[in-house]
Length: 300
Ligand SMILES: Nc1ncnc2c1ncn2[C@@H]1O[C@H](COP(=O)(O)OP(=O)(O)O)[C@@H](O)[C@H]1O
Ligand SMILES: [Mg+2]
Image 1: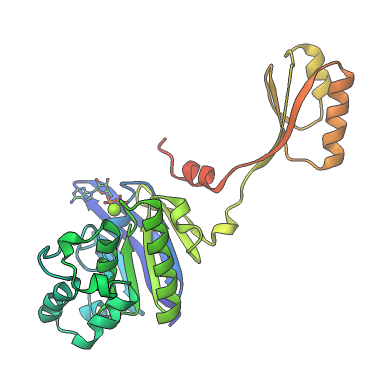
Image 2: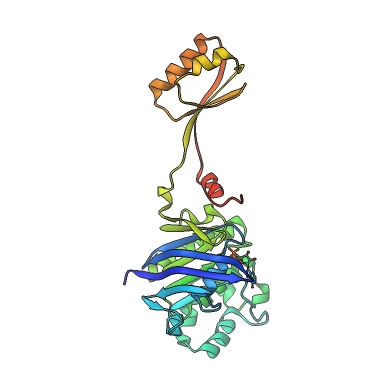
């Protein structure tokens, strides 16, 4: 079974408003799948349906090939981190996990190795009460909660939310290490592309409940164009000079052309200079991934 999570025609409707409408989404075994989309796109709602915390209005979610509504046994194999977890502030990390262990019953022996894995077992941390934890430590404890049952799937909803850049880096490295060492399948959401692009094997981009892209991030094609800055006066002579050059945008200061090779570029520059227009800058431009993400998810 290569597909660990498979979503088919999944819908969630609140008061006649469709918040999730996913025709198909597939998370494969052993990959880190980045679930990207702006705030309100439907990421948390989707994740809650995967965890059976919310009932879909229609559609199907299969985990390891079995529909989730038939049998909740699959939940034993998912470790999750959804929204801000709450802890007992006057207990240590170990004691918090012990309370959890007594509630849901897993092997108590897992607790220390898990705390070690997330970096909360060193001498100066092991007895620390949670109220003295930094935000990063709390996020690491949340990861420990997700991992302590020794799951096969890790479902992380914006795990770096609220962290500073160093904290984000730390959690990101930890997730990569965990995925590798434990062979986990990771489904991780974020509203920030740059947080995900270097760790995800594949991404799904969701906008207003719909998937607008799924695949490798490198496959997202970006537009490239040529920009020439100078003093142009949008007169009839300029139009003549630019005829047949692939110009896409004309203004007094900047001309834009479709992407072209060096030979064509030098030819255009020569034509403009001969016609008497001063040139200040010639630049090949390319849309950044961030631009593409923003244009895929913009409101219209
Ligand atoms: N209980 C609810 N009742 C009505 N609308 C909701 C409820 N929960 C979420 N929504 C709406 O569903 C949409 C998706 O929300 P959410 O899944 O939390 O987005 P994300 O996690 O991507 O930020 C939002 O427009 C939100 O307002
Ligand atoms: Mg959310």
